[in-house]
Image (tube, rainbow, N blue to C red; front, side, top):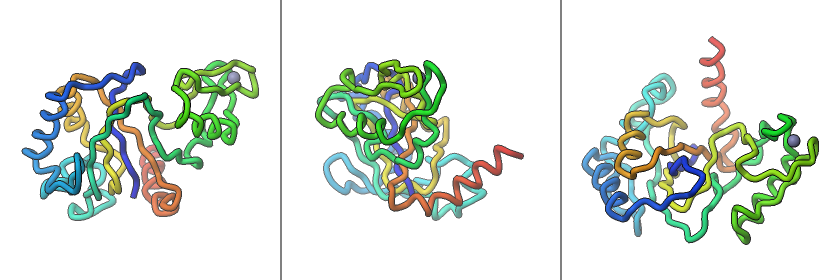
Length: 205
Ligand SMILES: [Zn+2]
């Protein structure tokens, strides 16, 4: 299980219009990807939820397993770094884009944790190799990330890739290209390893 964030790709953390967000919810409900409300702006999966997941998932999971726990909408007053729960193990691949040397993960995580208290622009991290004071956008995290004030969070997703045409539909309605940011909760990293191996295996073929 993992979480997926869908957020505007832009570094300017745009806030879509309320009408655009309503349109996205209506689309998800019409397509029966979301079902009953679970709370304010949170929904259970609908009967056609499997359509949300990339066809490659069929090799690993049964159609009935292609689901999520909840889909929810989030708005933040200040831009937030996504994924919110930083998957420490996943950031081992992070590199400085100035010198392409690896990042000191512990120092990076400390800098990211401070973003709860300070704006993104004041993110403080100095590359240990080239001594550049890096902005968040000068770090290659080795996985998609985003800085956003609006996002859709798919919690407990069965598969890490979504149907591209579906993501495009959502992007068109929101008026912004979207990035899909994965987040592997610390407790679930072991569970996720088989799926990750399968992904690597396919790439190596
Ligand atoms: Zn560097």
